[in-house]
Length: 311
Length: 311
Image 1 (tube, chains in turn red, brown):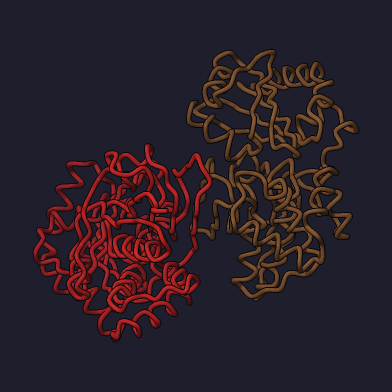
Image 2: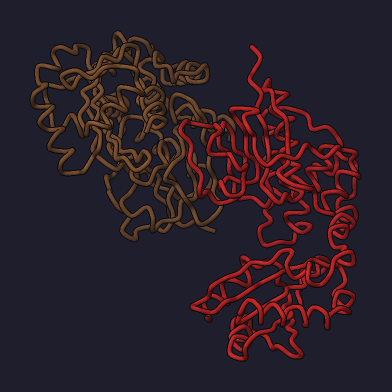
């Protein structure tokens, strides 16, 4: 019996794991007799482009809706409907493999759902290949190692587990790469900030928060050279001030994160009271609009909760 | 490091699988180093009592809320919050093992979630014991075989998969039982309806669903003689009407299922629109509050999905 075709995909604004996990799961399912195609819900970022070049993979077809092409789909690396295909509500979700919380997700039918609180979806897939006794091709192994390195910042993020470490070591061996030197090279490929304007950089990965009536904006850029990035400090500062004025933010924080040392320098601009709340919350001093935040890499885990509490 | 204690439980109005799966998962997790206790969210039904007697197990402690006893819990055989502990919203769900659709379920944190569209949660657990290389004690194997026989009506329900069959055969061998003769005896033990009031029978195996804003209650009783059961139709009808009034249900369906012929007669009461949605969804006529549902035995597979779609 030929199975009906299904699409497999990760979240919108895809990062490396979102696309690689779709390819890895599609391959595993096809080996097991399913009929699937991996697709992507957006263009690759610079890091992801580097990975696909390195392992000689073609980037999947990009779609934003299924538009009746298939009835059933498989999700990887997400479940919340706002992060998925535009017409996800009209589709039957048969399989999910994910490492996020579950929210805004509902099905009419029983399904296959595999979630584990690990650092990366590709780590779960690495386990599933072993369980199903399916071999991982060398170049796919390199892609999966890349996804784990990306999600865990080379196994340094606080989300990293022992299983992520074991997976990267095993996949790197299959791929024939030295994951530490390769990983650094790959992460660096995602830190090419020169091609973007300072205005683009403060918008690229920025989120707004309401904290007890205070309007707080927190943006983040990754780099391997903070002083190099700070050569454009005057432009960053001018753009942030203009944005605070235009949008009425009480506080704007630009996190400039060094992916090599897992430290962050914050550019912190806002009204006097808000800046002093920031100093208090993060136990730091803001001098010349800059604050040193050693060991900080995660906005979600290390910045938002203490700020929220102090406001 | 001693792990913090967690409770493991199945849904309210527990059937055999809800309680057995909690015991089986708690045992597996404790063997793996967790610190858990299996509890039940209600009294055992006659079939479940028969199973616990047969395999000499003590029925777990019964609770309806955690009341601060633990911070974290593991769910089996359900995920929808209205089927769970009263204070589930205040608890951290760390693990779920289930074979139902996902709905009304949301977490703040990543978790371990294992769902498969199989006939019974105990079948998934049988696979997990094998994957983790943990031995199933003989009397627990007998309980798990009973749960699968119960959920699949002796492997006759359309929810039955090859994996459920393989699980029952393997577990019956471990338990040293002839599953066919034992299974029939066990199912019959659950069909002694005379000892219960009609009010008890409509509550015994009943689940609530929110379907696009409509409050739907679906109960099921097993019998070997539908006309005998319908001698109390007037009492059933009065009790259901009173419950619809008291609880604000838009629709109440009592499935009276003949376990020998795998056919069902539905008692269907509710507001006019909801009853007509039922007729449309199940392609049947409701006359004198009754609908003939030949070949229907599974609430999950044959009643909930079409109803959900039409609402």
